[in-house]
View 1 (cartoon, one colour):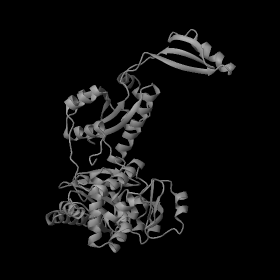
View 2 (cartoon, helix red, strand yellow):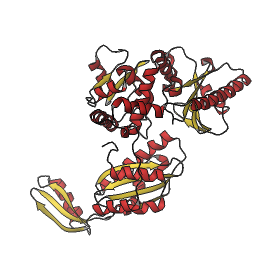
View 3 (cartoon, helix red, strand yellow):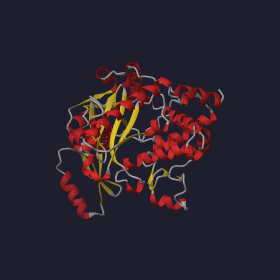
View 4 (tube, helix red, strand yellow):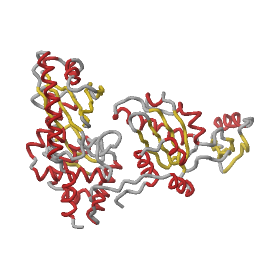
Length: 458
């Protein structure tokens, strides 16, 4: 299939329809009206703006996110963002949850759309911004003042390609490319195919993009920012727009770009989504795939904070497993962000031998030798030794724990955790029994990716 035909078909599928635009317009008007009415009650002159991809018209037809900003007079003082600002946010909708970045804001679900309502101060320059989110309106202004409809189409194509290859989204859960980063890449390279031609040759930690030429020497930029990809924010030269991008997501995008150019296909944009079955899990186990799952109750946290804690616990438990000689081959996590968290580990083995060879000090270290012998000569856990192998003391000891699931049950609390994850009740399971506990489509899709690991476009 020719590249142009593929891109044309993608664009037809992802461009928002007139009815979608009308639905969003209705929500925005309703939210704006409620905020302005409440501000009038408080006798405060505020402005309400729409930001993000909807404001820049780079959103995709299945996007359900609306960003609403309430601009307060700066003379109200910093605390007003947490008081009157938050009250104005809450007035816009009936059902909301309070979230927190550098200050509180509101997340709401309105007619199936996720609406973030954020209080900020009215400012005339990004230099006046006291928080990171205050830059957002300047990002909108920058893109809208430089983009035409063709560039907006190219951004949509790029976003869908990144979604299809699993690298879209700067949130902690994904650590991929943000929408604004996509827009800047198209601003720099002008088209999706031009970008892919360049990214096919990228090397992590060697790419610096300065869209408006803030710096005269790009090598100097590498001394300021140490990230895999550096894209200088046009509105703030002190910020790397790609700071949230992980090296593996950058690498995946590089390889996918190269693969698409060599063999273009719709599957890069719309991959086949498959769910694992119990029989597949049994076959994988028989081939030697050793899976360990820890199921926890999901704490009530906003997604970014939740995933930050999940990944901290995932890393902490991996360290715990390694400490007790269980080799971790891979790890990942899943959550419905409401009731369940699953920490998944692929281990070299669920059960390890009862006896472990333990290396002691070199015979040249006299004091260490004495201490080692005192500890081990009468130690009931020593099966063999102490003896000398080469120029070092050795003992063969009994392990206190030989199964990974038993280790987690008895030592879970010893691992480094996110504070809210640490306090949750948990269960430990191995292999396909997990599907008897959790059998949702979303979880089985996650399991398929975790166990199969093969990129959908290969």
